[in-house]
Length: 323
Image 1 (cartoon, one colour):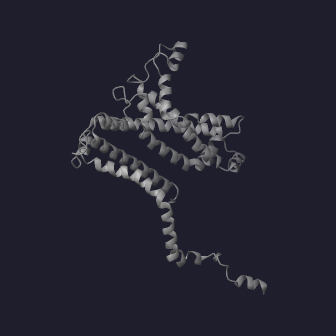
Image 2 (cartoon, rainbow, N blue to C red):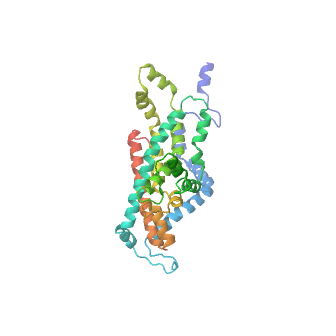
Image 3 (cartoon, rainbow, N blue to C red):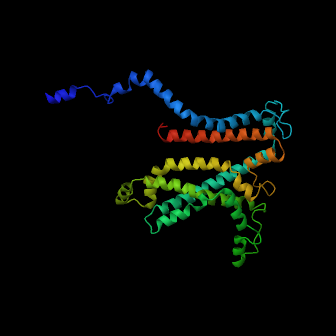
């Protein structure tokens, strides 16, 4: 009898009964609407500045791309429709910078990921002084891009640089102008990009590795699986979402690179390292063509949107439709 009374008693106030009733009409009734309105009211003061500072400039830049805005005559700006985009289509310098941007982005992202994956696998092992190795591995990530650029300019210096001095000591020649040579400028800058961004990728992959249950590796080892098979069947499936996400983000960030390359070469020599963002910067602030530079920015946003869409589609398909 007591058990029946306990089963049949009503829930106490503030402790609603679990089940379909908790997600029924009460979840979409006036009280739920008021709760959502109150939540938006609390979030709005923080959300408005973000919208103003991010969406506002984006919309202004899109509008500017359809005008002939130039330095010194902003007030007399006129609407010219898609003329900037038509000029951009036939601008060989822009497409050269676009090609260089793709070479830079993939040339940095792919080796960076492979090296970071190897380093993450190494740091995930039970080694002595592992904490020190992890701390040293993230030092490049903690340095501002401008500082990294200045440091590597000194390394590549043709006369007093560490690289050329080492080559001379080894009897491998008198060195060369790495950042001003037509054949060496882009590879030299790509190497710096790999070095500067590898810690971020390493940390992300290491976090994914540490979330992989160790029992899975032990079970695979007991089944006779070698190191490569364990990586292919256990490690990679576990870190695949993290690997895809960090690779997509790195590709976007590298395609939008500016500060590091600007400090190293300023787009030279002869435009061999002039990335799209550098080209847009020159058009806007060196030649005063704000409308034309804004059109370049719109094209860049479109390219980034396509990359994001491809990543999301692949993620949804790979995850069985999960979002």
